[in-house]
Amino acid sequence: MQDVNENAVESAEDEEVSYSKKDFMSDQTIRWCPGCGDYSILSQTQTVMSKLGVPREKFAVISGIGCSSRFPYYMDTFGFHTIHGRAPAFASGAKCVNPDLDVWVITGDGDGLSIGGNHFAHVLRRNVDMVYMLFNNRIYGLTKGQYSPTSEVGKVTKSTPLGSLDHPFNPLKFALGAGASFVARSVDVYAKDLRAALQAAHAHKGTSLVEIYQNCNIFNDLAFDDVVNRKVRDERVLFLTHGEPMTFGSADAPKGIRLNGTRPEVIELGDTYSASDCLVHDETDPVLAQILVEMDYPDFPVPLGVIRRIERTTYDGVFTAQVDHAIEKQGEPTLEALIYGGHTWKVE
Image 1: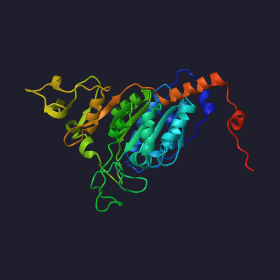
Image 2 (image 1 turned 90 degrees about the vertical axis):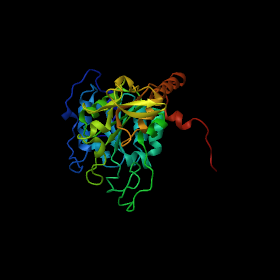
Image 3 (image 1 turned 120 degrees about the vertical axis):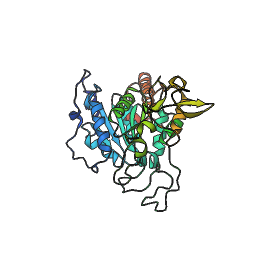
Image 4 (image 1 turned 90 degrees about the horizontal axis):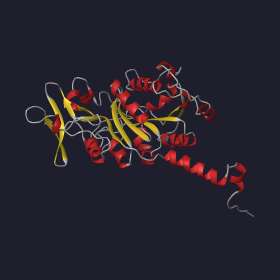
């Protein structure tokens, strides 16, 4: 892992660059448990970054605390391994003072939604241009298996031996409430779909949240297996495509989602209903986004893909414009003027 260096970023060549996945693999020994879903996420991220045409020195990978937050060490890019829950603050500062940086935040359900929940909310509402990857394994892995903000009610863990009493966070519902401009969901082992979600997130201007179902095979093994296992996923996962009807199920038993009044319902496609009766996914529809983030198994299939994508002003964009305007009006700032400017007091 390296520190963000402004001079190195500014000296990056503007011409098109070509990389392989190996160019983004650091020389550090990966210290995740064998079988952890983080390996797959790391691999897909390195693959995606190598295809973006962005100079490697313009990437900054910034994390908080947790198993997922080891990520910057394993990326041959600039980056920070910061403090618990505060990665969005470091990332916002880095992006605002280095507008050309390509910022990626790595966090987990504990780091991002518990101690870091306040930072999570505000980076979404500010819409700072960054990719925000939230690894959700419904457990605290690094600290050895306590329940997390996304753990289900009744979850038996080391910290809840009689079962958790807390109602779990829905990260995407939380994000929409905070005004997120881009919301998506994917799965650690769905390589193709995860790459597509990360590519879409990178292309978006603003805070692009990608929740990733990630398996912790040591402390919460098979947390999402009843949904994402390839033997059952056709019946339990809804892959979203903008402009396409919401259909799922097997070839022998196709199904879809339609609205019955204001409520979604699952319908069987065939003699009575067809794909034309199904809801059509629209990433810009705020009402539809709210419906989708409420859908969950077993009543509904779990939506995967881009759920919400709208264009709105980015914080770093207006920040840079404000600074440029102030310099144009007042001239280049100096440290001496800052120290001696404004009010001063003499203490006797």
